[in-house]
Figure 1 (cartoon, rainbow, N blue to C red):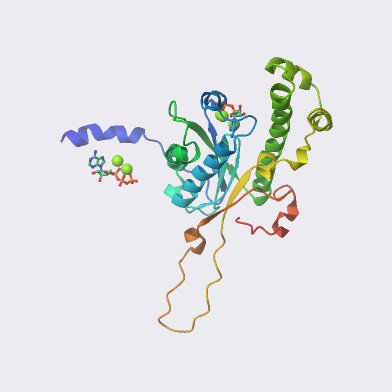
Figure 2 (cartoon, helix red, strand yellow):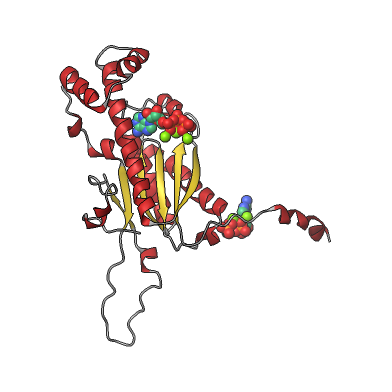
Length: 266
Ligand code: ATP
Ligand code: ATP
Ligand code: MG
Ligand code: MG
Ligand code: MG
Ligand code: MG
Ligand code: MG
């Protein structure tokens, strides 16, 4: 039979399971967003519409994939944390990665007109993705602390850089040269003394990124009737995602994070 004659090619498809009982983090990042944000005239350094659209696309991922319990975004990237015990797609790496990437990208395009009503898309934006496994809560917390530290470092640099260009009259090469070798305190000082900007008063979204957390399940009501509906087997899997933006100070950067008002989704 024709089908069985060709079916052997299936055996070239290799399994790619992700280690059980480990946290999966999928990070997506815009491909050449330097160019994309130029082509679509994003405000520099932070286009609020662009950041909100990223949040909206991440919400789409959390809506579709219930095992994603937390997402953190900054600039053109988003990180998605999956439950340690997730069996999504039997933990097949390519399936999970491609599903997240594809849902994110299509949601980004789908919601584009809402956030940029007077800016038609010039070409289809795309993102890349990777999945990293982390064995314990410590690495997961440190992972998100690392991304949030990155948000802050980049944003401080970009804020001074664009102040020098847009208000200081420097060209981009001159602004880079001016900032070369400066430490954080000097960047704050340039912003304050030359441009009257107190960095700490900038919107938290810019300085700290944004986070979406899946609400923990409501405690099951104690009902004594024999006909009461049974609670779902995996209650958190049906809870909606809630946008909590931005991340409170140090929520992920210290072991005491669990004591913040944010419930640990881990
Ligand atoms: P790569 O394909 O290697 O990721 P890239 O050009 O996307 O290349 P990144 O390091 O990911 O490089 O940087 C993202 C770029 O997009 C930065 O230049 C950043 O300033 C810009 N960008 C992303 N989001 C926004 C936004 N909301 N407002 C303004 N600029 C943004
Ligand atoms: P999964 O997520 O597992 O892939 P699925 O519903 O996408 O689930 P497939 O085996 O991929 O299942 O089947 C694709 C389905 O989409 C089929 O039911 C097929 O009939 C339908 N479909 C795809 N393209 C077309 C098309 N152009 N016209 C009509 N039906 C289509
Ligand atoms: Mg990249
Ligand atoms: Mg990028
Ligand atoms: Mg990036
Ligand atoms: Mg198919
Ligand atoms: Mg299909």
